[in-house]
Every structure is written in C-alpha cells, then in structure tokens.
Length: 68
Image (tube, rainbow, N blue to C red; front, side, top):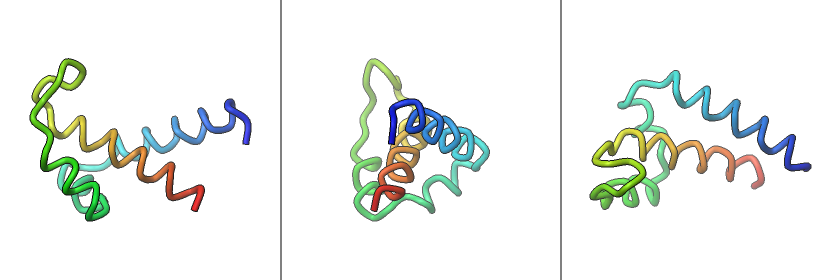
C-alpha cells in the first residue's frame, strides 16, 4: 500500500480509538501491549498520561493487525 493509503488508514484508526472510553481501550489491548502500557512511567511526549499512551499503543496494534 502507498504511504497515502497507510496514512488514511491510520487516521481512521486513531479516530476510532478516540471514540473509545479509557476502559474500552485497555480491554482491546493485546496481552503483550497491556504489559507494555503497565510499564509506562511517563516521558516528554506523553507526560504522565498513561491513557494517551495506551491509545497510541492500541492504534498501532490495530494498524499492525491489518497487515496480518
């Protein structure tokens, strides 16, 4: 797929994830990504917002799942 198509797909995924509650985000994470999010301690980009981090992890997970 072209980068333009991939960008549009990711934009749609990010929009879908934004519509989810924080609990729904956590429930949709794979076991590996739940573990990844649980180890988050904050950084310059997210600050201490674990929910924003979890949303980005879920969006990437959903994008990667499309390729499988």
